[in-house]
Amino acid sequence: APIAYWLFNEGCGTPSTDNSRNGNLGSFTTSSYAGGVSGAPGDTALFANSTNQAVTVPAGGFGAIGANNQVTLSFWGFGDPAQQARNNTTINGNSGGNNRMVFTHAPWGDGRIYWDSGVVGGSCCGAEQRINTNPLPVNLYEGQWNHYAMVKNGTTNFSGIYVNGNLITSSNSSTADLAGLTQLILAQDHRGLLDDISIYSRALSVPEIQSLTNRETYLTTGGAWNAPAIWNTGEAPAC
Image (cartoon, rainbow, N blue to C red; front, side, top):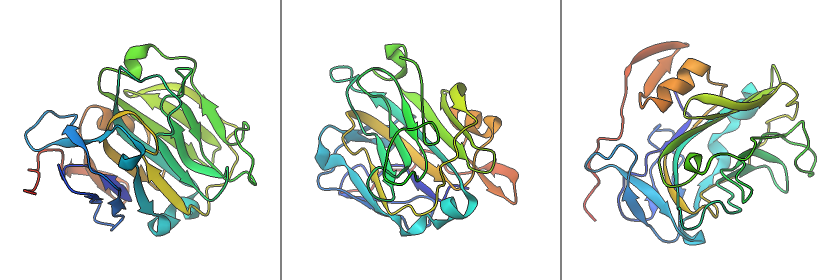
C-alpha cells in the first residue's frame, strides 16, 4: 500500500487529504481544481497554475523510504498546452540543498523528464542520483492525461522512469542513498493538472506500475495483491 496518496478530490478548500490514512496532510495557499483523470462525477485534480497551488507536506511520515532505501513515485499529469514544455519542478522531495530524494521535472523545458533520487552531499545531478529521458513527443507531457512512475531501488541500484506503464529509461548505477527526507512539495511550480499522487516505500514491480497505469488501484498486505481498493469515485464535499 502507498505510504501517502493524494487524490485531490476535495474540489475546494486548501488542505489536501492523504487517502492512505497515514496523516500526510498537504497545505497550500490557494485552491484550484479541475476535472480529474477518471472523468467521474466528484473526481477532481489539482489545477497548478501558479506557485500558490504548490502543496507542502510535512516530511515526518516518510522514514520508511530511508529504512528500505527504496521508493516509487506515481502520478497522473495533464500538462498545460499553452505553457509546456517549461522548466517545471513537479515534485520536490529533498533533505536540504540539492539532496534530491523524490524529485522530478516532468517535464523540463527541453522536453525531457528528469528523476533525481538520493543524497549526494549537496551536489546535484550525477549518475549516482539522476536519470533522464530523451526529448519526448509532446503528447507525453501536454494536452492529455499521462501516467508517470519513477522508481529507485537502493538495494540493486536500479532507477527507472515509466510513462504509461512503459519503461522509458533506466540505470543500474543509482547508488545515492535515500535516507533523511525532510521536505516534500507537490506541484512546486508545475503548470497543468496533477492527480492521484502516491508514494511507496518500495520499488514497485512492472506489473504493479502497469496496474496503476490501467487505473486499477490495489491494497497489498505482505506482498500479496488483494481486491481492488478505492478509486476516484468519491463525491467532493460541499464547500
